[in-house]
Length: 129
Image 1 (cartoon, rainbow, N blue to C red):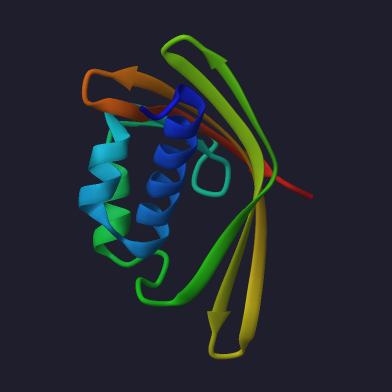
Image 2: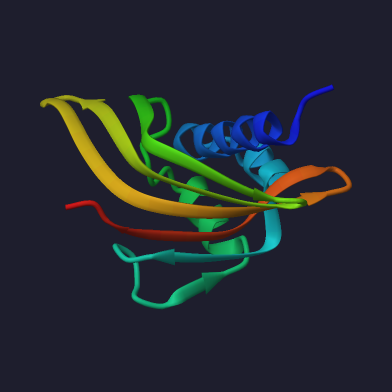
């Protein structure tokens, strides 16, 4: 049986890969319907629910099919029963026509264990430099 920490990391990696690959089905399986997200580069206000992200993924905001990879720098997991807080600096590398582009973002994601598994319920992003 998978331990809680391994299950959280597995869910997080599936969640992040779904975002950058445009995999809406995997995103739905790893994200709570009432997710709350702060994305400083979109708006200084909280974005609630799935509809905004569904629109973004439907309209290829990340360039689905692009050659990309992500790394989690200084990852940390705080596990409190059925609640997990993960924090890290996301290093996103994307190969585009002019070369490789790198982006770094500090992120915290809160996951809750539901009967069907772990899901992201809250995201907070801030500039990494």
